[in-house]
Length: 317
Image (cartoon, rainbow, N blue to C red; front, side, top):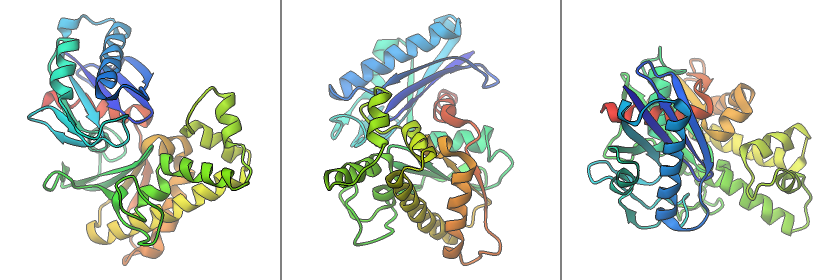
């Protein structure tokens, strides 16, 4: 039997169809709607699911279910998503599971977007041979997940929120409402806000020129990568600042968890690759009590499809 996995992000909806051996047999990628709230997002997910199944060539009765990795607070039993700040107008609670199930006429299981991505890396990707790992996914925001003794550690439901580790109590505001969180420095959305602020103050950059040339309305991971290749001063400064913040947060988390491995994923992490990961590792070392025995740092092996593949594991639960 095949399964469908959906990675719902602030920028894109990535959907895959996988077979019993986790081979991707079909896929679809669509932009996340900027307007229309949860209903518009649900319609877009349903369209993406249908397109991915069509791309795979399998019959609908050969698909056992759909898994969705979503930002926000997840109630798996109720099938609801609450306070998904990186999604449009999603501040309340919405029954994504039941509503999507009506549209695709299949069962739908929900999970936290980063937790399912970390699970896929732990079971199928970079961490497949590790007993424990910390996953840090650098995308629109910053998400994380913890695997201990080869099992996801969920705590009381909010474990792994490394993006809201405070790295500077007097730092910039974070979307969560606090100040100085890691996400306020290294999340792609926060970096774009800072870039726009600096441009308004008269500083120059190629970031927004590249954005317009590519027909985008946001600074995607690819735009950041192109700007860095052009030695753009502002892009370089903001990425340097992100590496500094990631080093503080991950080094401190390592002191607490002492995992075998740190896996860096997400749009920025995957796009910038192992050189970016190596810089984060170097920035983490001065924060570690056991710097002579650091964890192994790796890029997420499943790349941009890791979240969707991880979501496809949910129907098995």
